[in-house]
Amino acid sequence: MLSTADVVILNGAAMISARGEFDRFTAHVLDEAIEEAVAETTGGVCLDMSGVTFVDLSVVRLIVAANLRLRDSGRFVKILSPSRTVERLLAAMQLGDGLYV
Image (cartoon, rainbow, N blue to C red):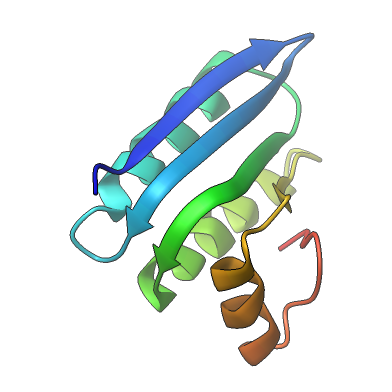
């Protein structure tokens, strides 16, 4: 399955809609979308992960790293609408619902 991450910018904030399978081989797709969102906005970055069918730890690390980079400037990364697959991984890592990483 093709992995996609589309960025929409609105009022200084970004929404990234992720679809497909994300692992160490496809994490760069999400990473590039996050970098685009960070460069083009001054607000937070929200990730709609409702269309993610597989995710591994490398992607969670990527999201946490992005959040740590943004935190100093008062910005954030937030996961919205996680798929069941994403919810299970976040729960296993004790990161919670609708996570602000």
